[in-house]
Length: 477
Image 1: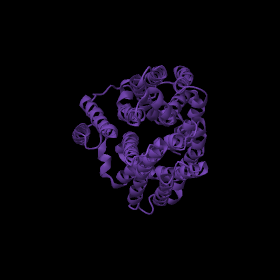
Image 2: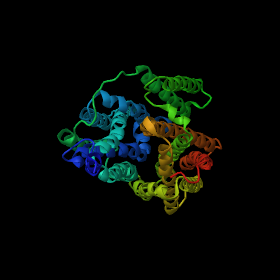
Image 3: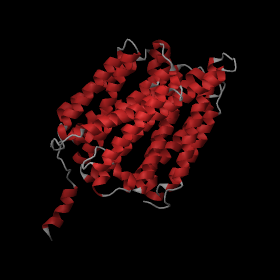
Image 4: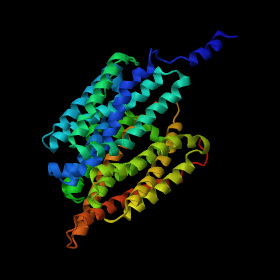
């Protein structure tokens, strides 16, 4: 027997990078990733309390959500070049320290500006940790354990947003919103200890040339776009400032796109969008993220300010939907292996439309069980379409460009999530103003009317997703 052939089974049992205890090496990143994803959704439930205590409007407070996601979206595409300039240990240790510093700044913030600054620092850390979790797992686990390892990473990403609103609601029921941030710190310290004792470098530090112009264009382009949409909540869509920010953002992003398509080593290889399978898969993933983020931004505020439910009970009301999101996310990936992306994607968007419409028909007197049911239905539909769409898109890529697909999807879904949250905020304000224009002074009724406008937007996203899912091939496994 050929020696190369006889060695293949042995090679299959070994990881690309040998680590004595792979699970210990991953623990620092897993804990940091959990805190990062927990932070992305947990603060939604505290927004009404923050508006009252910091004396800011809905349009202003939503920056705590959009600003965080914007920073994640800006940093994510830079993770590849950063890991070529610094060791894995250095990047992860910096990210954990960075998140802890951001959490302490947020917890002790005297006003809104400092709180937002702390949130954006945390977003930098999450943007560094998330892609490295997948990269390191691929390197340090042998092939026969890789499925379980990736499942563990996926579970962290799914479970943290599922339990975030509930745990935050419990914290807010017994303590100040500041304790949401203080509670991050001990977990980050534990993660730091795991990383410093067990994590080793898994990539070569080659220090290639950095395309600083692309980094500047990416930051300014995405930042201007999110800024313009966010300012529309306060100033209206016809404002010169809003229109100016949107035009500047679009022009800079056009320049950025042209540069990524013409340079030899782009930060984001946007040539992947020339492949139809990836293009439709990526667009469906972005729409799905917009559905989830817009609804999860509006729902906790509707429960508290429309139904006048205490914050701790709000977290409990959100829990069944969060758990359903995690369960369906885990199952839908396997469903793709059996039936492809077409059926689960179409069905997922139809179910999402039903859930969004149910939320749009709520009132100040809606039963709690009805709100829970609508949330659960929405959280069945959105993740049912998400994983098959993502897999369909990534499977369309082959060769060197395949490595860029995940970075593109992760980056753009964070940006789209920030924009969807900002649009939902703007529609919330328009709906409230329309209700109050009739001369009524019912604050709860006005807020519910505004939330309806936002949930109609969620419905429209689901409808667009369904229409695009009609273009998915019947069998693409």
